[in-house]
Length: 101
Image 1: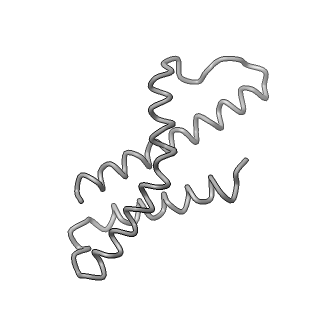
Image 2: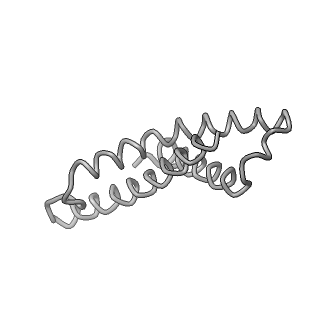
Image 3: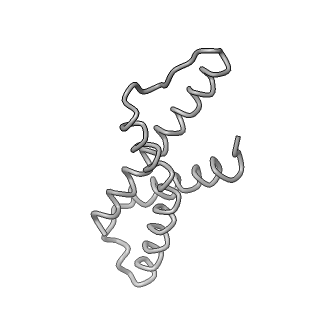
């Protein structure tokens, strides 16, 4: 579970980076500036893919943690990790389903 929690944090950070990149690219297109934000397309693609995976991975993490918490094994994961991942899950749900612009 320790590896999985670290992977979820990395995915959530990639989600934040990909959301920022998407906003900047929309702003640049609106201003008429062509080109990509990151000159290394493979790095940008990896960040975007991990960012898209973050919603599913965060949901699985929270479900597993809830099961562990119910069986009193949830204390193995630091509280800040759970709070960060839950907040990121709420932000991802808002980004993908509510805002969706």
